[in-house]
Image (cartoon, rainbow, N blue to C red; front, side, top):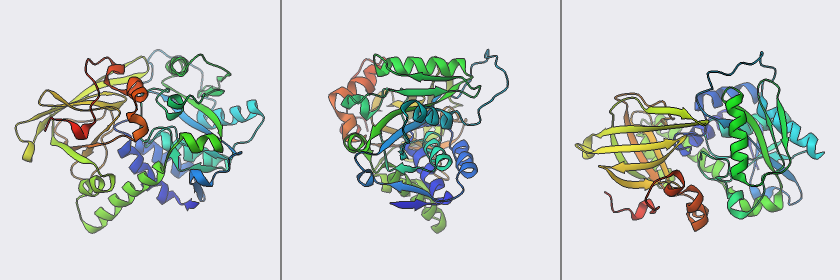
Length: 364
């Protein structure tokens, strides 16, 4: 068990934004949330430290960066929909939860776990069901292992609350929550997967919050020493530089069905002079091409960092002429199984090619 200060959590959130592959929520808003809500120390527990019969649950937001323009609502009544959804699930189940765990790694959605932990005085578990950020609710280790997400609760800023006792599939849960988010101005607070420690021990990707903290510490230490932040991050993650270049233009994107779809295009510089790079995203960076050939795809991680300070580029905020370094990182082995590739490989998103582990790619 480790007790985290606000500055510790800020480092963690930076690392989560890096591992969020362009998604996972807004880092600056996540930092603001933590600074506002965390007044003391937050306990970070390893999964092994969490007793088998204790309960934890997963709070998060579902939505996109672009709220629906035609939503007409009364004034907002709920300051934190995700805290309200967590409390609603406790009331429904008639039990108190002893911990939270992030739904994914991201500057915004991981901050949500710390916000709930601070508001309700519970611990945060050092793990998540993905090891990165993902676009759809069913993209979790729980889905891969057949662990149900129900019951789950949904709450928006206007005070609308919903308990979902059962769903026919996690894909249906995705449709339900995404639809409510669209009707709620862009996002809703959700709490799902109320689970015992015994189940979490076999289903969470462990140590991911600590990994994010290592990234944040590496960034801080590199800045203190006047060293290259991108190189420090690459070293900590065991990642590989895929490209360095300048953005040809602003990210091109659209909000569709509650997701942010788009592309980013780059011209190479330095050792990549004369080469082209393209990234396609659906909330998160999912497919990349070097000189028109696929070089890395989900579930492996495509991370875009600003070359000057190593800060992550969050979708869809890339601006013309930004200088970036694109790095690739292998997904957790859990996400390289055939079932994982079926639900989170390129064909799931409509592309007519198969997943190839990026370290085996012939595109150089």
